[in-house]
Length: 254
Image (tube, rainbow, N blue to C red; front, side, top):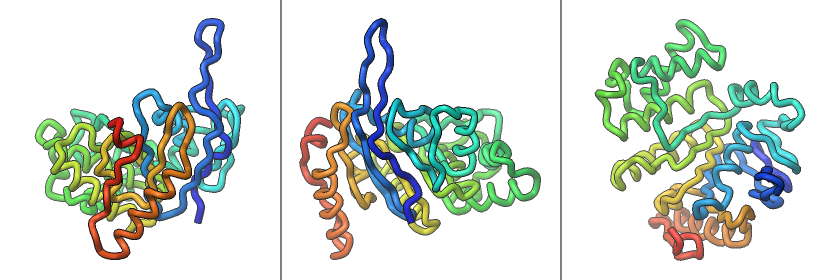
């Protein structure tokens, strides 16, 4: 089932007396249970595209549909409700409240989504257990490792069962070993709970958990290359082999 679509999306900004184009006719779609990575150099439009898919920004033109609801750029007041209902975010920075415990950080996110009291606490405990942190539920962020903090951030995104998960460089602040563990856990949870997962990244390890890998250059998504990479990854998994890390134009630039 398709849960996220972008059709011919553009984005431009005014700089002085000029308009600067950031995205040029981007089209993509995600199905439930699908994991898609987006690679590209700095300045290619990755974060802008993620922000539009996450209803933080609106497109200059084109069409975005989130969990069956078309996003109307003229009705910006509707965007927070779409985010609360349908999207879970994982950011490069952990963005945890330092004075709240692990369970309270997740519970607060649920409060924002409308869940209160015992229901919110039960859901927060469920997702912390899912990421292997039930024994750290009462710890403050200062007493947790970087990997544990990112697990809380993932638990917060999972809380409330949003069908779409958007992750912006989720391994950027982790060492390679912990980053690989976090990615495998992320993949397992997304598949188990049938969530669509879209990851913006510079980390080539993300390819190993992805069903498809998209490339973005100068605001344009290169669909042809992405399908080739995604097919290779899927074929390797089907044979029980470790997914390859092919050298593409994008990976050569990382």
